[in-house]
Image 1 (cartoon, rainbow, N blue to C red):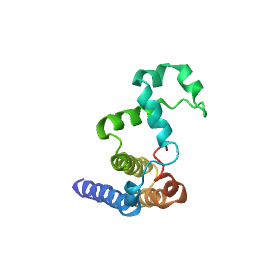
Image 2: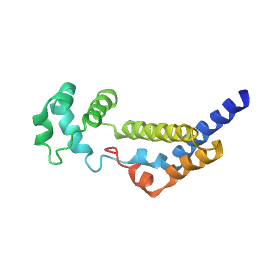
Image 3: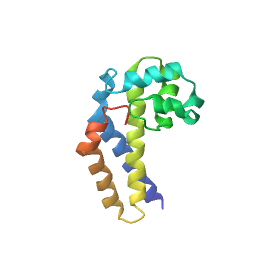
Length: 137
């Protein structure tokens, strides 16, 4: 039992290191894609409106109901101001958390090694590489 925890801890550390090595340069980016638009939205509205005001979502060009995205921008703006580096650091922490969750979920159906390989393939794949630089994702 103790050896398994050690292996699990190594897997978590390896995923964190992989995310840091592959994607640390995104923290140097400025606001790109839809970031400035979302920052504008959160500067003009209250958090509750993201969840309850249908007219807010209908007024947006994409008309997508994504209140958690807007609420996360709101919270991070309150915490970090207009400095984009911490926004990207949170984004990378979320990416690492997803990869860790994927590895442990896959362990329910696969061997530990296969689940770890799948998590690392997820991290190095083209979709994640493109997504790592986009806060809106």
